[in-house]
Amino acid sequence: MIKSTIQIDVELDKDRVPENIYWSTTDREQQAQKARAMLLAFWDAADKSALRIDLWTKDMMVDEMADFFYQTLMTMGDTLGRSINEKELVDDMKGFAKDFYQKFRKLQLEKNKIEGKQ
Image: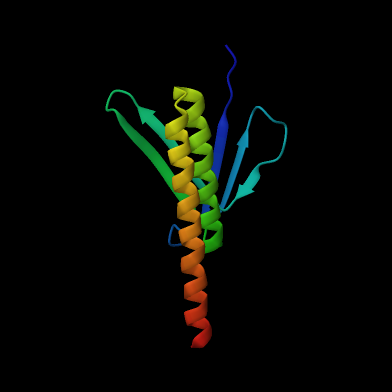
C-alpha cells in the first residue's frame, strides 16, 4: 500500500488569528507552499455529516475570497460530475457558482461607487 501525507502548518498571531498557512505533501519533493486560505472537508460516514476546517489569513482580501469560493464551487462541480455522473446537477452547481460570482462583482462595484462618493 502506498501512503501519502499532507501536512498543514498554521502560524497564529497572539490572538490566535492565522497569519500564515503552509502546506506540503510527501508526494512532491518541493518546499511547503504558502496559502492565504484553505477549506478542508471530511465525510464522517458513521454520523453522515461533513467535518470541516475553514481558515484564512489576515492578508486575504475580499476579492480573493470571492475568487477562491468561485473556483472552489466550480471544482466541486467537477468532482461531483466524476463521482455521480449527473450532468444536470453539475451544470446547476456551476451555474450557481457563476451567479454567485456575478452578484459579488456587482456588489463590489456598488460598494466602490458609494465609498468613492464619500
